[in-house]
Image (cartoon, rainbow, N blue to C red):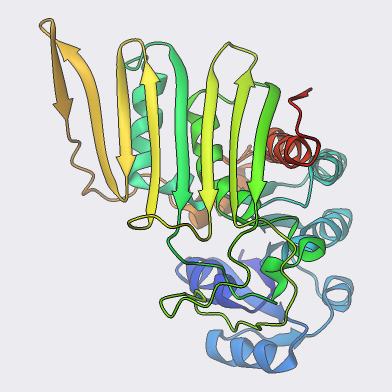
Length: 348
């Protein structure tokens, strides 16, 4: 029997990722799509073959008999939509970040547990070939004891549309830390087995909101020079974990740097890894000599995010991207923002 699917949000992440991802799975029936912009909702319904479209997610969840949904809205709506869907007995595939803060995230976990339904966070980088390889390498003990990880995502110019919801703290929860940071902080914690954070220290900066550089990028989004930008454009932080390991991070939308960079670096007692802009290298020892290994990642991705979620629904098993881990991630993000505000280390 086909699973009845609904998508809440009809913007870029819904169209390019979620809807196309589920379009490739045969036993999914496209029932309804929702967006507060009726033009977007109608366009997506027609383009992808949804039977109906809505402009209010509450109406959709009340009126349609759905098995699962994607939540592809601005961050502040993740929490209320997910709670209502779970209460209605609907499985949820929620875009990152799971919520605006750890408190909301924990309530979502509690609602998931009460409902008996599946809640998965759309942390798509876990489903990449490089992350799959590094996780297997770590789980097999080939890094030894991972004691430190550096990670970051730095843009030369890349504020995603000043004046939109991304730059409005009430709607987004923050800037690049909560937008970009969730991806690679999550991978760093995932590779280490998601230990509990015990303390964080961080700083945030807002220096480029008025920048007029002609090379500035809106990342495909409309920018309003007079619009709200009350979030950071750079966040740095240092995290201590219960197992003694540490995490060093830097995430920015705009910086005076040479080029955009996405990276993580793993330090282990038996080996390390360097991932930078799509290139992965393993540094280890063989016959008492340092060697560099470049894995061939040109293989079919072992786990697809969308078929994995469908399989979790059908077999009633936990997803790879667990919401319980997202609570720890949001705890770190909350702590860094609080540390930046108070100029103090935050202990949990």
